[in-house]
Image (cartoon, rainbow, N blue to C red; front, top):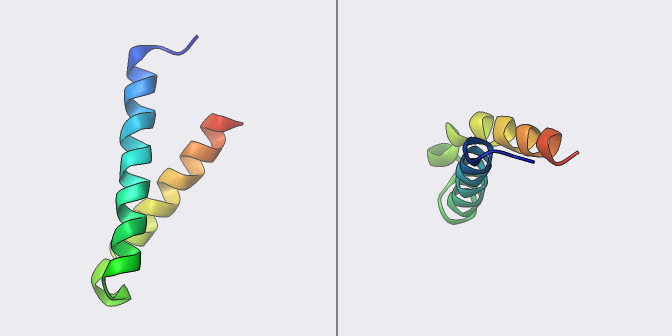
Length: 51
C-alpha cells in the first residue's frame, strides 16, 4: 500500500506534466524549452512508478 507521501508526490508530478504539456501547446517552443528536460524526467518517473 502506498503512503500519503507517495500519493502526494505522484499528484505533484502529474500536475506538472499536465501543466507543462499545456504550456508546450500554447506558447512558442523557445519560451517553453526550459520545461522540456524536467517534463521528461517526470514522465520517466511516472512510468517507472506505474510499472
